[in-house]
Image (cartoon, rainbow, N blue to C red):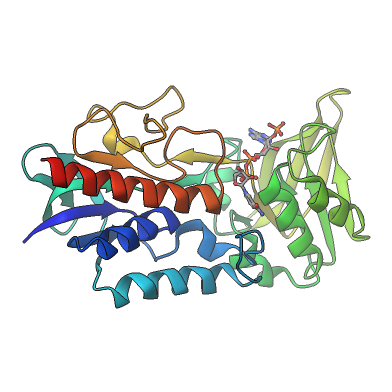
Length: 302
Ligand code: NAP
C-alpha cells in the first residue's frame, strides 16, 4: 500500500500530525520504535497544556494515541533506518519498507550523556536518565541529579519525595529551570544543592559507588557517596539517519521554516527534532498540526 503520509515518530508531534492528517481524510502510517507518547509519556505530570487539567504524562500520551487509533491511523513498531527519495518515498525500517507520497519526520530528541569516566558502564546499574521510570528503586536511598534545567529540577523534586537525600549538581549558580520550580526545590529539606560543580567521574567498584564532582571555581574535588545518579543535562536530536538526505543545522536539528517544510520536497518535520527556539509539549503539537496541513497542501497541489 502507498500511504498518503508516513509519519516517523509516535510522540506528541507525530501523533498530532496523524490526527490532523486523518481528519483531512488522508491515509496515514505512524512508525514508532519504542512506545507511543515519546518523552511526555515519561513525565510525571502534564500541567501546562492549555485547557487541560493536570494529568500524568502517560495518560496524556494514551489519550492522544486513542484519538489517532479511533480515526483509523495505522501504527507499526519498527525502527526507521533510511528514507529513499522518489515518487512515492520509501521509508526503510528494520522490518522492511513502507511507501508514502510524503513523509513527516517527528523523531524527537534523546538524552545527552555527560561523557565522563564510568558513565557508559553504569547506565542501568546506577545511572538513569528517567526519574519517573527508575525513581522507585531509590526509596530511602541517596541519589544525585545532574543538570540545571526544567528536567533536572523536576527530577530532584520528584526524587526528594522518595529518596532519603538528593544532591542536585549544577555547573552554575543560576538555574535554567523556571523560577516556580526552583522555589519548590528550595523548599525541600532533603535536597542539597551542589552548585558551580561538574561531575568528573562515576565510581564503579563492582557496583555503583558514587560520583566525584569538581567545583569549577575552586577546583576542589568532592566525592558524593550515592546509590544512584540521574543525568538530566539536556537533549540531542535523533536525526543521525537523515544526515546527507536532509539539511541539518550545526547541532543536528532538522532545518525548516515555521511551515515545517524541509529542503527535500514532500518531507516535513515536526517537534523537538526541528531547529527552533522553544521545545515544549505545546510547540510539539503545534508543529504536528502545521506539518500535517503542509503535507495535505503538498498532496493537493502535487
Ligand atoms: P535544558 O533546558 O537544555 O537544560 C540542560 C541543563 O544541563 C542545563 O542546566 C545545562 O547547564 C546543563 N548541562 C548541559 N550540558 C552539561 C554538561 N556537560 N555538564 C553539566 N551540565 C550540563 O534541558 P532539559 O532540562 O532536559 O529541558 C529540555 C527542554 O524541555 C527545555 O526546553 C525545557 O524547558 C523542556 N522541559 C519542560 C518541562 C516543563 O515545562 N515542565 C519539563 C522538562 C523539560 P547550563 O544551564 O549551564 O547550560
